[in-house]
Length: 94
Image (cartoon, rainbow, N blue to C red; front, side, top):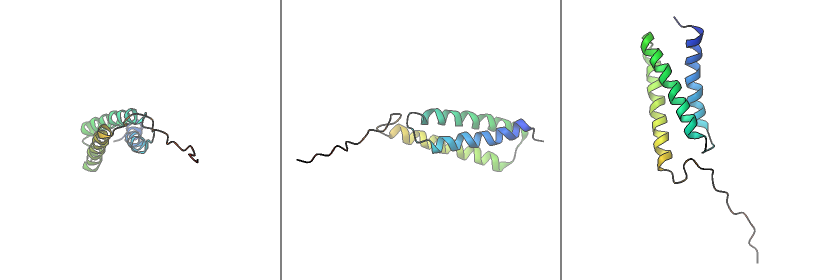
């Protein structure tokens, strides 16, 4: 039986996960990933305690794997965690 808190927890991990995946600000992405991982871990623990369904367990595992992949790509990126450089758009007519 789900309580209201458990239902919120179910929605919360997905919201944090989506926020991490959609974050465009490179200075905030690491924080979003950490928040999502924490929410997913909390929900995974609740699901294990409840003996929850396999579909949600699989979704949680897939979300964690996706976040791990995202972190790996960010660590391989030359300008990770920094604001994107502005292009020089100055007109150079002579």
